[in-house]
Image 1 (cartoon, rainbow, N blue to C red):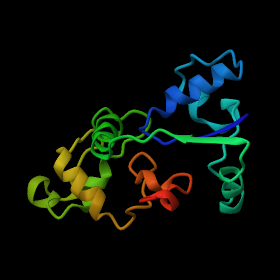
Image 2: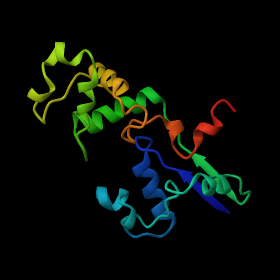
Image 3: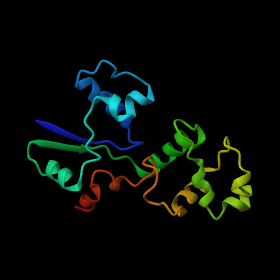
Length: 157
């Protein structure tokens, strides 16, 4: 049988990638090195997330494939993303979404005066994320889960 798994950031994607590397017999499956887990050439796994809609549809409609995705409670996922990418600044600092909140300047002043180490309150950061002109095509750590792997086709079905 064939398996296609939809990996989503902030939905245990690092752990799932390590599990699939272990299944595939990759010796570095326990690596905690961000590059070896997430950077395509070093993962040793085939990534279908960059396939065309037509190719994804053919995989999803192929009876030889089992398709799965791990869906996380959206609020829990958002809080996890904030803690990981804004508060702790792991990998990248994504606190800058806060600047899009209409509540930012009254609370903190001009964005240009904010230091790189600054961490806004969660509610102002989340308000900024949802007010950002980039929403919902935002950083994958915060994008709606239905944006991944054509899942929008299966909402309410």
